[in-house]
Image (cartoon, rainbow, N blue to C red; front, side):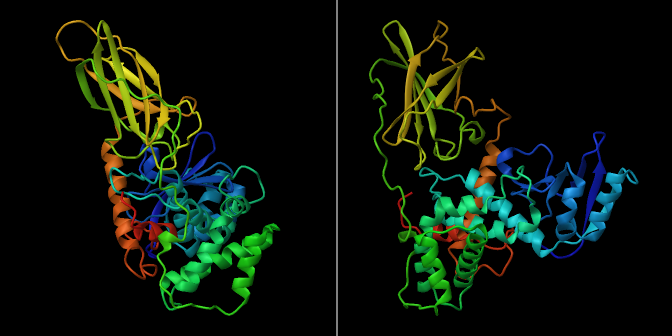
Length: 416
């Protein structure tokens, strides 16, 4: 992120809420925005835009004052204070990006990657190892503690939870650190993450064998063993698909039509469906007098094997939307249902998407171009992560180099 001053727009709304408008585009799809809950505000960044300060939606200016000056500089903090007291309704103010602004941007991007990273066998985009990403997010959260306070409305202030959930990754990270030449940026980043995790765990009163081994490794002289290590081999990956109780699709019958559906990432949780545009497909068949649709959706490598109510939503010729229950079968979600098709020889126009009822916000605007832009973004980042010592140079996305999980993913030899 550039250190030069940039102008931001500070404006007070009719409801008293204050917004600092930076470069996050209004109305951009959720999967193109990084979001971070801070004390008294929500921060957002566009992951597709140029490096920029966040847009801040401030609902409690008094609480936000503890970090505003450290992210935007004193002039912006003063303008927010003036808007909160009614002295101003809006102002254009120079902001001075700071180290905390850079760390917050990186933390926001890490949470975005945990939610929206488009892992896909079909598109050859490897998944990020969750324990590696989770531990680096814990370290970053610890480094960004000025953004948070003691209130319980900041779900991203979750250092203890992140360490508890992902401490199984500590031993492999220590092994990676010992096997990496100490003069490299990767070794320095590994040590920084490990020391921040140790400090955060100590502050939170966490204990356990993995954390005790971490403390021992950090308090003893580092012992590089000189043996190169492929980080992708250090972490447990789900390489195969478990069987679940889906029935095989029916074959035979007269083919009426087939096609691809829409894979809208917003309509189901992460880790359910392969992120490719071609992951959702359907086939309409005539079985005697019956008309049936068969749906096949390529599963994400981490997709749950227990029963979940994943469904396909089918619409024929702009008619009502009907849902087809899907079951996990090997590496795909599959399902079938009778279909009401109009008579005649005209091929029906069938639209189909996949969703999780209760999670689904409903169909939104077509986002294919934005999804392609996200795939291009992660491919650039993986290409950068495959190069040695890239931490010292800000990436074009403004997040100061790859995450450790991206380095591990970029060096994987799995067949995606």
